[in-house]
Image (cartoon, rainbow, N blue to C red; front, side):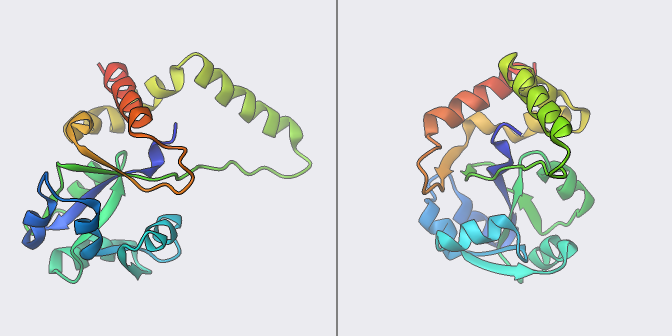
Length: 185
């Protein structure tokens, strides 16, 4: 997903709206109670960076318990946040419009060890998509994404990078967001 799986937007309980102001720092957000799925890779990353993470075994509880005020917010991917928020409508929930939290989160393709032909075909296809810059266009023009990405106004958000590897920079994120913006028009 071109590294964008780790591009995260908060859905918060409206009682903590002030804490998501444009001037909020990453340290301000770390003080709030964040709920994530049990054993998700995100959970491990966020705990390592001292976020106040609580875990749930039940996906549905991310939204219902945040709406009840048991947690302050959830971090969701840019490709899923709008549809999920529509599914779990609550007058107590709102999507943050000021911040984009970014961390490395990869997708892996697993194939049987003896199926090298399939592994090579997947690698060839992904490399070809990347080489021709068609991957971003394909990703952002996928119907569910095409309708929801413009609503996020990603290029106007304050970017917070959580990356010990130093592979991610604000410049690379800004360039990717501009590429997404161009591909979606």
